[in-house]
Image: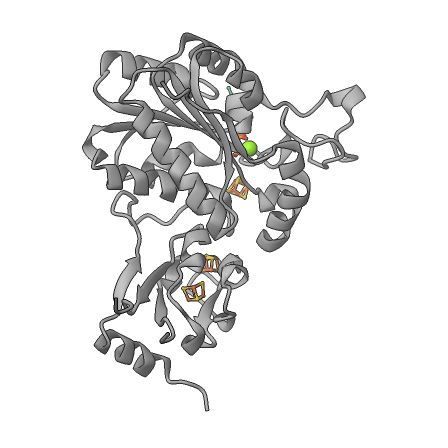
Length: 76
Length: 263
Ligand SMILES: Cc1ncc(C[n+]2csc(CCOP(=O)(O)OP(=O)(O)O)c2C)c(N)n1
Ligand code: SF4
Ligand code: SF4
Ligand code: SF4
Ligand SMILES: [Mg+2]
């Protein structure tokens, strides 16, 4: 079976740097950036984009609805 | 060599990548006033997603509490009012009785629902009002700086119990949800959490059930959501979620407490 592929987009200015998305990702895709946003919070980025499956675990636990998830549909 | 993320996204879009999760239109663009990592945000989102998915956005009225969620109406893109401390179910009662065709819910913290509002909560449930109650239990008064609540755990430190809660001085942790499940006026009672993707999915189903039940006119649907208060508990958000799992869940076990009998 071909690998399921996806990616996330982040509304960085709404992020509060809580790191719950990093913990929630089953594939170790996310890491907190060394930069800060306009409010002074660190925010996540895709450290291992190729490992992302678009499972949306990160987005489901994000309290500030920062994350939009994309997924390549699997062919039937 | 590191992958060029922007190029990688473009490649996946060219392969037909579609949005599988995005922010519901039932949340406004106003950023939440909550501390980073606070469970209130997820609870808000799930309720608003369910309302959108059921197509009842214009037919739903929410009642916000006093507590950190006091300005929830700024974040919910639906009709809402805000009640005096603890009185949200009384206000919801009035709204539902005068607008029986609307979907009505209250959204309340543990200080609001299970401390100052205990009388209103008990009598709303005892009358079997046809509303949904979403009860955000973080075991503390978050908004006012982390005072002990009736729901605080034995040994739990707070600004009003700096040496930890002692049962002989402060009483025992109150599980009002279990008491309310004993009343004939409650139709559906469940306890959920939102700290993992799996719990988020189950919690959303419970919220959906609570709204669906309102079509039946059979009484209160009560969904307790055990959440963190990382600021009040003086922890980081990941630490608070771990502490919640180890300490809150044993005292407040997750799962259905009262499910409608199948006829
Ligand atoms: C009549 C009245 N008494 C006391 C208060 C102070 N007060 C504001 S919020 C709050 C407790 C909120 O705790 P909870 O309901 O658990 O909400 P949380 O902030 O934890 O979500 C209290 C005691 C008030 N606003 N009004
Ligand atoms: S969508 Fe899934 S795999 Fe991708 S970053 Fe989020 S949690 Fe990780
Ligand atoms: S869970 Fe959301 S708010 Fe927290 S760090 Fe991740 S993107 Fe930011
Ligand atoms: S004080 Fe506690 S309940 Fe209030 S927003 Fe902060 S973490 Fe959430
Ligand atoms: Mg509270």
